[in-house]
Length: 193
Image (cartoon, rainbow, N blue to C red; front, side):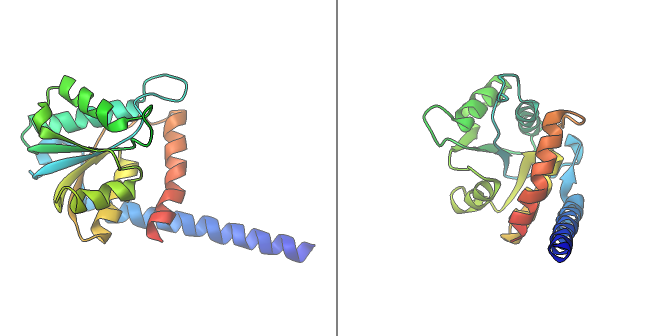
């Protein structure tokens, strides 16, 4: 019994160490291509805004969503991009991230003719792969929060794309932020494999 417990402990310890190492390496590779301020972001053909739900499960505002929309509108208004692709989940007729994103970008001052919808961006991998395969984007800006951008940049670079990330405001110290960051550890390991 002791031998089994030791084996389980070793497996858990190795798994935790592997997750931490993967997380750190994905964060580190993204550093040179992350931008916090609009005036330092290089101009690109388009921005890819990664989707998330507009509202939290309890019905409250999802600030991750709100800040991504604001960041994308800021890029467009500053002339950093000429077009925006909103990529998200539209898997049922009752759930459509991309149409909500489009409506909110229009409200934020981005003309509709400069917004393209990718309703099949169910996962970050899908969004990044489809950016090139469907929308012919190889050199573009990805918009999301930093913890998400690091993984998205890792995936895009692995696919040979030339991307940078524009960091949308985060909501640090909240339960939602802790949940998203914890989820990232496993998502990053999955992205690596």
